[in-house]
Length: 465
Image (cartoon, helix red, strand yellow):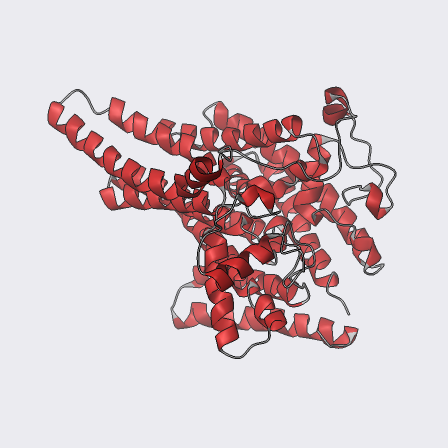
């Protein structure tokens, strides 16, 4: 953005004031006072995500993208260009070109969007930048469905607004909104699958079950880790099957519905990996090793050594004395500031980055303790719903832990692989403040408020001219 620092900050202030006026006016026009807080949160989140995208090019803070028009023809940007130019799926072993092994839903959408932009007369560079419109939409849909899940779970008033704000201003979602790889589409579709699965559990309508199947399949069609929602959904389906009694007609009807579910989810989710397995003998769970090697650190060190002198993830190539190796620090730091050191941009960011890191770490501990309450039967009384969330969270955690231990390198520890987990984390926080002890609740509001404000400060300052 070609602005002076004063102009940049003035625009942020004016837009925030504008968001307040629009949200307040909407509440008055529709005669709903409770419309103001969620709308104000959503508009400010939209502004922050949009600002981040405006000052972040498609080769900056990306993952496996490389860049458009690169001569080697590798990376996810090259995959998008290949699909646009050739008009068909790769007809060669996709593991022979970096970034081509990924499931293709996002890349197909991006290729079509890029083609339309070029047909409108845009130059390739500008058309490529416009792809961030897609990831912005993904992030907004993620937030909207998060809000729908929170209301479905019974959150109201301040607890609802807190959960929405934690989701809307979480840094990992800001970072992914500017990242044109396939992560965010997969997470968005997974969150949608969660919503429709909960809706099916409540209303027992076949369309909700089939939409759940479609969302799981499409999430896997974006990135195979979309399958992480499947165990929790399978539990809900199994619970309903085995608690309905032994009436043959009901059993046959239910099994018929589950057969339709399978007809939707399996072809959709497994088409591309099965194609690669059959045609090119690519393992279903193929993942290349990338990033700095951490195999020199013991498992004890990776769990217990939590020394840190910076709020950013340490990397030798960025001038740090070592590559971040502690599992928890790596997850927290990459979830807050990615794999980057923002101190090189301007001197104002780092103090806020420290506040973000400290408040984020405290929230990590708080949510972990709240999760224990969930497992003990507190907060969520309905057994199938409680176990659904418990299975979903544990599946994500165990997947990430296994990935970080079995593939001991820096990149495998990035929170972006399970970024959707910020949604259940925000939900748990909202559920607790609704019923928890007053002193603890006040502390949660304080640490959450500091976290949200410091996140906004870091990501507005990151774009400071």
